[in-house]
Amino acid sequence: MADALGEHLLRYNKHFGEKVTLKDLQGKWLWDVVSTDRHAVLDAYLRSEDFFEVLAVMPESQRVLHRLQMNYEVFIATAAMEVPTSFQAKYHWLAKHFPFIPASHIVYCGDKSILHADYLIDDNPRQLRRFKGEGILYNAPHNAGVKGYKRVNDWLEVEQLFLS
Image (cartoon, rainbow, N blue to C red; front, side):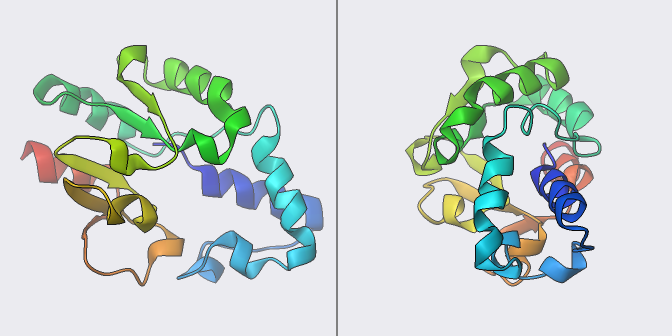
């Protein structure tokens, strides 16, 4: 739904005058590519007040989620405990870009295995490992080599999977 990696790369490249691309991250997290002496800066981006409020919306996610909501009970789960300062910004971002999702259907957690749902779409395989329903891996550079999950490349594929 939100392009956090794009914003992270934008800030990092601007700050350090580098040109790290999504291609450079295939099979790796940004933290794996960046030298350890810069990890505190990466973390500071995440904890800045505006990081989560300015994220770009993934193409087609608004339209597809709106359609999904007509056929399914949709909940948005965010591992906000990983960045506890993000709660308010994530709430505002969701309200701005996905106003059709009621606040009662937004779940702030750390480990998404607490969710009792049929499906979980996530780009982080760690969130899918203990989930009891069907985990669907949303394609991202850091999960390029991960196997064992149904995979979607974009929101159009989500639409095709659930609404065709």
